[in-house]
Length: 82
Image 1 (cartoon, helix red, strand yellow):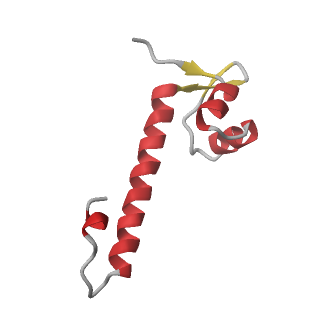
Image 2 (spheres, rainbow, N blue to C red):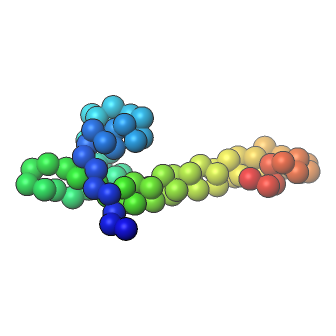
């Protein structure tokens, strides 16, 4: 199956953010983008990869925070499973 190509409005709806935020994230290099003429386009698979990466970073930060908070004490089992 071919990768879906999305416009700014499509990405905004997909991520549930404002279109201006999509432009800002693309300009800052946080979202992979390519141009068709002067219009921005995005590959859905690349947007999904960004979501996975950000999610993984968030989980790692949560683990780091939790391990720091429980330094010298046993961490609850539920937190070790994150």
